[in-house]
Amino acid sequence: MRIDEVKNPEREDSGKPLAGVRILAAEQMQALPYATQLMAHLGAVVVKVEHPRSGESGRGARPALTDTDGREVGATYLRNNLSKKSIGIDLKQPAGVALFKRLATHFDVVAENFKPGTMERLGLGYEALSADSPGLVYVSVSGFGNLDDSPYASWPAYAPIPEAMAGVYEQNRKPGERPKALVAGALGDIGSGMFAVIGTLAALRHRDRTGLGQHVDVAMFDAMVAMADMVPFMASMDAPRISTGGPWIIDTFRASDGYFVIEVIRDNHLHQLARAIGKPEWIDDPRFSDRASWPEYLEPVFRPAIEAWAANRTKLDACHALSKHGVAAGPSNTAEDLRADPHVALRNMLIEVPRPDSDKALQVVGNPVKMSRAADGPVRRFPRLGEHTEEVLRETLALDDAEIADLRAQAVI
Image (tube, rainbow, N blue to C red):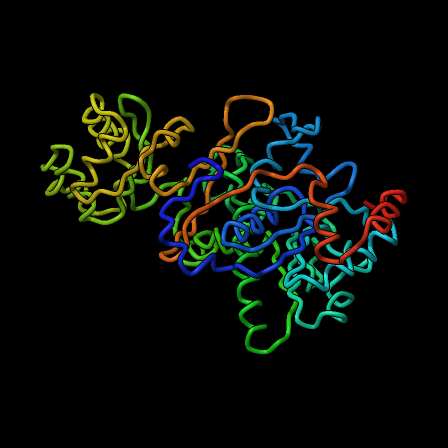
């Protein structure tokens, strides 16, 4: 889907579900910007507050491109700020803090993801802002939370840190090997962002009933503990880690053009697999009657048979064939595979955003929340730094030319 396209316009008869919700976001990098972008997809107005000269830290990520204003814009910013407005305010100046406070009274939600205590030190914490706006929903995303005194509260936390602390890496570590610290597809950020959206919507619903806002606090560590729920649960049942093997076949297998994944965890799953690849004798083979023995036969029996069967099939064809027999399977896709995938196209999960420095479009993930009465799009490009400063100040606070010029002269905006 290109950036200005709308798929299924008949779904828009009741408008976007978050139409009318206004969010003022003092945000950076990925976790919170992803959350507010998702809410912008759903119809919220998101005004992003950035430093007027340097912008938020996500703009400095790599790789980068050159925007129409001559500034470099990094990948983290590019993929998390569609359909937002950018205003430049220097929050280190008292006049900038005062301006933010004035703006906050016109918004339903104030969202921030600085280190705990930062907004309070600026005089922009929940208590300070809610005094003037008791219905304000205030959303914080941080490594270890704001509402409790975590022993890790002062730690900086990018996604791999809470991922590791939640046990994600240990669960897949093979005996004798060190854990691999890999960004799990931005799991730490995206997972935390989704919980921030859930918390925001719940707080807005609570405000509908009571008239009162509240502080929604999402710790990335908490979010990762929730998303890695198998780790403590399986350990409490004395079950093996995935990497050490267990009564299952969960692995990647080679096809003619790459790899695909199979999950076989029940006796009937093995029977379905046996029929699918032409090995019906496995069904009554006494070696496989006890699932606990399956890992022992993965390399000498199962893998050679599965990969011989798949050798002349593409990974997608192999998965289609397996799925017809009820076997859970899916291709291990590359970026090129995703671009060509019919499901991804049908569901608008890749949005083409024109590049300001090239004829080649950027491909940014779409909105994963589909609704029967609200269509996807239209989506606006990422904003230039401070692109909407004057527009927002004029429309929201009714500032005139002289007032805006004075703020510029003070380097507040």
